[in-house]
Length: 67
Image (tube, rainbow, N blue to C red; front, side):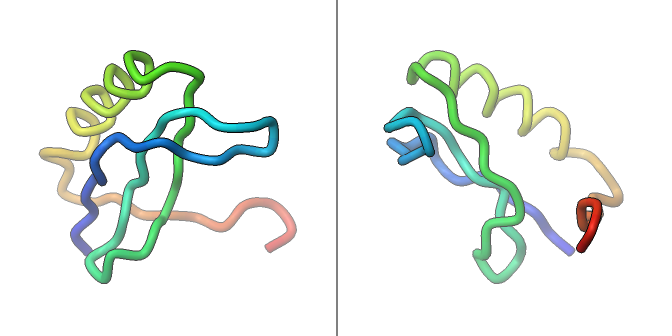
């Protein structure tokens, strides 16, 4: 499975709007979304997320409790 990051974008959250990005699967479906109050925070987190998954040989999602 190949996971990728989307570009940083404006996102709606439960408390309003913010900025963030998604990690998506090979079909372009979001696997996880991250949202932050500022564009700069979202960009910094995206750089770290890219570093985290960039050279990984396995990235595997797990359902949360009760799923």
